Image (cartoon, rainbow, N blue to C red; front, side, top):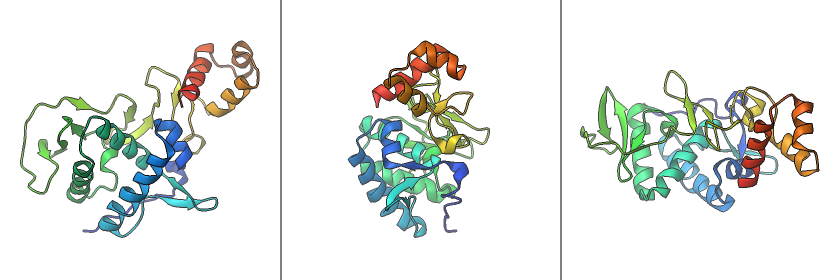
Length: 224
């Protein structure tokens, strides 16, 4: 059965341009642009369902939804672990086909040992290749440290500098732009006022947020 991308432009799934992705994931824009085009659009997308994962906004600038943002995060993490790019793409392709899942890398069940990519299917650990042979090799690494998942294992929120910080990306708040956790306050607003000379204490009183939350916002934007 052919896979279809559901609601890829749905505002409830967030809107992330290439500069947004670079900010949130901490990767150079040229890499983000290249990987989206080569793999998510011209490669996997066209092969699986004759479509693209991105769409154009504002003079042909590309944008993606929250699930693709999370998939790119996992993709880059796998590359940093030294997993071969072709292996990552091949595994993702097979997972998508076998699970009929448009966003397999946004699923909590995805695990890796740095060499092969694994996923859970029918309570067994399966190698992500066409042979689909059961393999119970010990899992070394997983990618849940910055992601909060829903009860059905789908990525729900992303914490770009960690869950112990106040900055969160939630597609249901402010179109998915980074906000202070538990509020609709966009971090860019706070950071812009801070860089314009406003004191942390003043911002804390003005927005009724803690100084720690403001410091987390500053940390997030300075690290970008």
